[in-house]
Length: 307
Ligand code: PMP
Image 1 (spheres, rainbow, N blue to C red):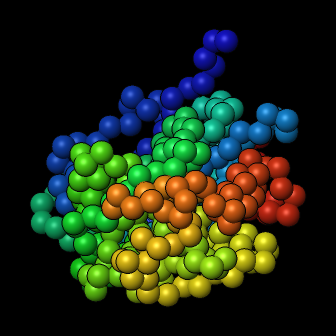
Image 2: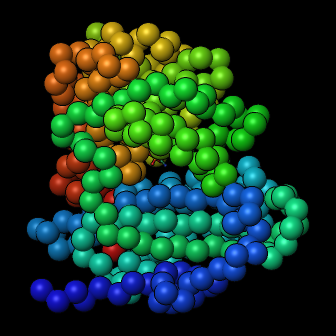
Image 3: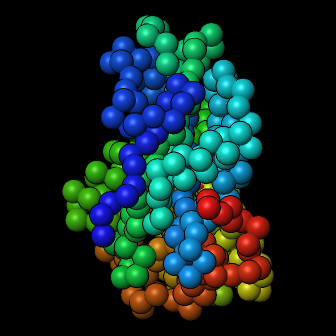
């Protein structure tokens, strides 16, 4: 089949060919990481002949909150951003699984790191994307030698570009050690999250996950798992989690827009549970994938059709 898609982006207020969506090397955000971004998935459903974007308004509310935390000048509403995004996917004629990346960045060609009194722009681009990490075969992970930064160093509830230096260090260390992903501890030494995903431990049939004070990003997928688990009658507890609990959990899984729901088979060379996907993870993962693919009527209000 010929490729009938178009590579378009939203840039400086217009949808244009991505090859023309270029910024100067002098751009403020390029120097200082002074940008906030999001990551949103849309899933193609062949039977329903549509693409469904997952929790688009919740993602854009978080983006707007990120600009607020950082004092970035920004006046678009989540509803306006959702409308632009849906048009961008439609204009691109994408009828497959997609990943949308909106970024609000300090666009001035100026020196001096700051957030106040500097011009911003929003750009949005869209990629075809299937799995980002393996969701079926179990991930090998290690606790990072890099600690997660604390909220009073770089605000953890803002998805700020500069903060991803921390993620990049941990991810590279993990991959260069033959692992798939890293697990951060927070500044106190408690479990925080992965390089770009939240973490959940299953112990005695309950799900335990670090809370906001453990320097996590509040994931939209994490929030969806709270709801899915409650509906399945599985208790979820948010609390401080000790490193050694990673070694004796029955099951562990990651959640995130990129990673979706993926299970861990190893942490620090110790097998998680019996080294196979566990029953709780299996239930959550299966309901999650059915939901995002538009096969679960109960969670239809999380989906926005593109066409
Ligand atoms: N933590 C970090 C550091 C992330 O980058 C992400 C990905 N956005 C997540 C957690 C998961 O968040 P979400 O479920 O909203 O994608």
